[in-house]
Image 1 (cartoon, rainbow, N blue to C red):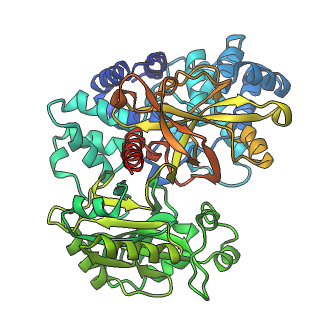
Image 2: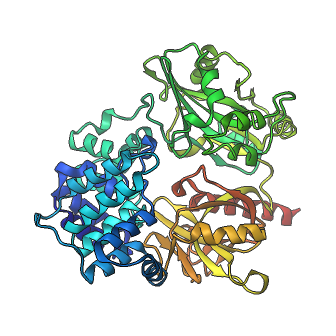
Image 3: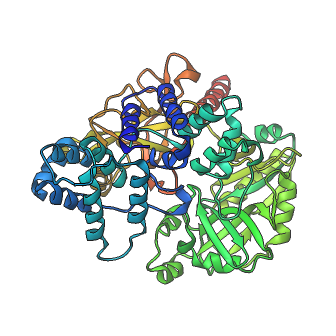
Length: 585
């Protein structure tokens, strides 16, 4: 495939706000170039490999600017001015190159494979002194490119492609291209156990999608999630009159994979975190299994008293790999295990929860870093209430009730009624925190003049693959937060609404949906302005009243893992029921 053909497709995708049309364009792309579908599946998101590989292109805007200076004679001051005007280094590259550049005697058109190989070479360059090498490699490539190709090459190479293509969009288009007769859920199951679009593409091409859904050591899965209900009585009834109740720990979700002496850990977002938790790696070496995949929560604890510390403390361990001895001593981590998904060559995801819990207890011996999630089996809402109160006293955020029925399998990537979380009565105030995506910003006034004063937040609608606006938030931010935001969002600001954002409210600046923040709110109300869950509610959407920032950036979550529009709709229904009961009383 020629690179020019690929960028034409990217142009068409970025030019449509309609998700169905986008899927149709990608379907056509996959069908016409099935021999390169694996490369396309990565590059269409601006990646070179699945997220869990840890491979990132890793080239800075400054390095790209150097390459453009070599090619066009532009200086840094001119480039910075153009970036300020155009807001996109890809657009800057296209404009500078249109004025004239060095030429190459090699006039063969560039291929997509050549571009992919360039990215792999750049990705493998590490350490000091490599920026000059990267700039030279990029310069040599751009000499041969057209101006339009250069725009997209620069966007991809700097991690700024942003045409609204998500994992969900890709696997939908792959199914439509190669196996339209099968259910979307079959493709999603395969992806949830092996989150690599190129892998799913090859399964579809080789007609193996129906035998693929199961865990594999060192391939992180999309973790199973819990629904909500407003009372423990409802929860026990929903689960068939009996449930396993577990403490809900406020930490970082962690998957532990072991095969022989090799051990790796992964985050909820499928990023490898092995180097960040060396004490956990050592503790897992004692686990009596050749191959095993464990699911749990990494929680900061006081090593002397066992007291559980707040989530903010464990979040300080994310991404830290250089001062680990000091940080590990300052913020010791304990993992509370609650599931086992694979054991000695046998997938356990299809076994019942009761069977998996039994295997977990048999396989793992508790030590100072590995503990089992505290659990009871209960048929009584009164007993469940006491257990819940004990969990709060122990420093947890609530409990998770789990089905013990025969069908209580591990459903990777699904939020369903086999697991139900409970934090406290879901009454007029939204007691649970919400993790929402930033999609826009409003400039401040008065003391906040010169910085952002408020943000536009959205929930995620999986069915539409869209981020739907749900509130404007200006409370809870410190002066430090506000000054940080200008830096955090500087490379994400765009002058037009991203194609995967649905909002009737118009912010001063649109922001590509890439950052998740945690908020609290007073209640959920109907709104003529916001679009959250609009197709479920009817004429209006839903909005969060009196939202306030908790101070937590959810760097452990992908944007697609934020609070969904369906979850907010379910909370709205719970709230209505509670309000009705209170009015009746």
